[in-house]
Image 1: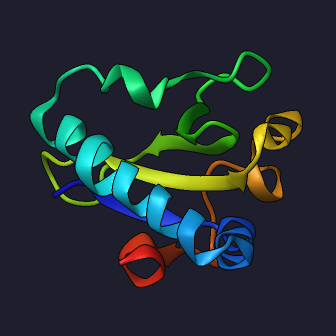
Image 2: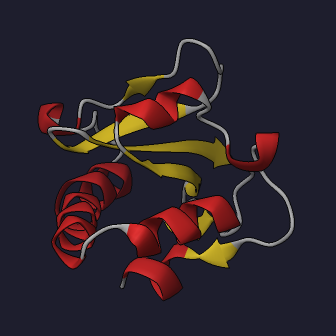
Image 3: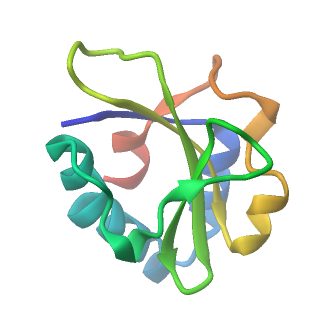
Length: 117
């Protein structure tokens, strides 16, 4: 299983989503994103994963018609497993400032399993 962390801004925004939207995000992550990462294959086309043009090294994922999340790969925590940091979640407007707290990594992170599982 790939390893994940969230930044505080992501966690706060995730908690503000409706329960239905949180379930939809969780389903996209668990049923498509994670299996693709685990298998080392291209992401499912429905996720529309692509780099954020204004912020190299940060990617966006589409989990609903107007549901977006931004994330980046960081240094591996467990050998052989990709490690992802989730930055922002919300509508398309998060792409105006795709990095949470203006950084790719840092203290104050939580494991995503504590947040979405």
